[in-house]
Length: 224
Image 1: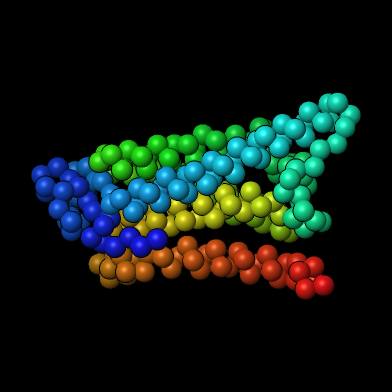
Image 2 (image 1 turned 45 degrees about the vertical axis):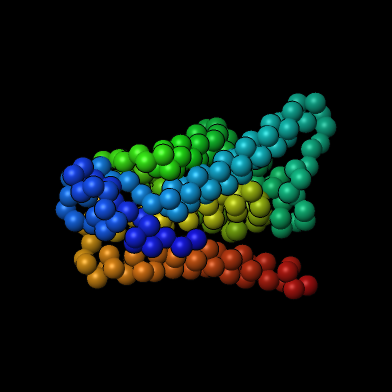
């Protein structure tokens, strides 16, 4: 997805919604976004919501099977490594005292709502954008903790979890880039220009690094 400075616009009170709009007025007024950025929120939010929904259904089926004395194997349990069931039955799957996907059902749904609002021309104040950034920071931090637990403690992968990780990384990267470019997060001019030009680098490198960790963690399995 390409989101240029001209597309990811700042629409502030009094600037007429001009394409550049990165001055101090963008900090004082309400800030919107371009269509590509809004679609990114909708798509990544939908991907995360889908993952959370499927995991929630499979978790329910696992609990139902246990209550009935039967067994249930999630559809994404493909082999000893790609085994969603191992993840769902781990202690890490309910770290807050309830199934983790329930948190995703709420938060990813909120991201979709924000993206749809932006598509409709909504503009939000600085505190709102910073709140979204804080939320995505928490989300990506939680995903990275779950990634570590999955790779090095539980020893299994869940494909739906992987989808949620990717969606959250992309979401966090672009929300942070948006806020830096619009001066909502203070940054030197050089950094702001670099973010505008190379906004795709952080998500690509981050996801690629996770892919390499997965590959090396089970190298013998993949190549055996």
